[in-house]
Image (cartoon, rainbow, N blue to C red; front, side, top):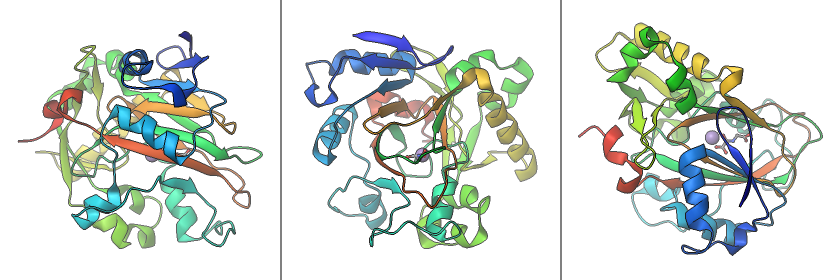
Length: 290
Ligand code: OGA
Ligand code: MN
């Protein structure tokens, strides 16, 4: 496989692979190894439809089906769209709750830290891109953790961090944070350090949803969380992707943060996203509070 670094500290672009050709024995093992080592993979010029996107995601782990998790029963999986295009084909108003919800993605975050099982990966592919803006940015919390000064690491090393979706949404709008979609998940604690079971590298497992550190005052905990996110998202740990239709980005949620960036909201922007849930072999036990 021909690989080119995306950035100085993490991520590779992989050329000459059609993601529709992967099977458990063919190409997936090499790509999975690259995922473990590099945390973010870029493939350009792909042609994933919902079926091939789903088939690809199934190689990484169980598909994250939030509707089923929320309902507590089987609900048919549908590939989630990250889009400002509404059911009636109009573009959502810049000030609507729909657009505010997309703006929630513009805070540095890790997907699904508020779910009963967190995400291993997100496979995001561009369907419609705006004329400017709308980049997706990734930051390596593995490279950042390795470079972090000891005094900043100290309160995080053995920490348990609490996550709540409505916490991040409240930074955008109190009305958004009050929606039942945002308040339906009970607060979730995870250990702050996630050692990769394949490479042994440690990363900081943190997100915009993080609202408290166990055993610390709320204010003190939030200051530590904010300072850590700020450190992890310094330019030397960040890759910014400008989308072309057909691009596919796959990232490791255990060791990255990501965010969207604004675009002219009167223009349509549609990405399709499938997260897979972590399983025991991905090191779930090291962050889970028993
Ligand atoms: C996501 C996400 C950001 C973007 O799909 O999980 O955060 O750029 N997307 O749309
Ligand atoms: Mn996201």
